[in-house]
Image (cartoon, rainbow, N blue to C red):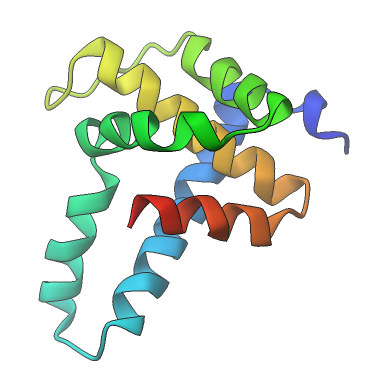
Length: 120
């Protein structure tokens, strides 16, 4: 299936899982630790507030097509807004997740890792 045939929210759904996998792998590379500690540290990367802040870091490094994927996710209309984040933060986080979903579907996992490294 062509990546443009996926809805931005479907890409964000996939990107959320892929991004979390990158976070978990990153944490394990730092060394073995109890799972409770891994979960605590993972939360530092996966909240909408934190992901929204990360957008400012990553945006200058995106290609035109990557920026378009981010904007598709950011501009998608979702009925859900978490209580722990403002609507703008949630939309920006959705855009970041959409970007990672887009890269995953395109098979550009090395590029996703490069961008992820900018964030950690």
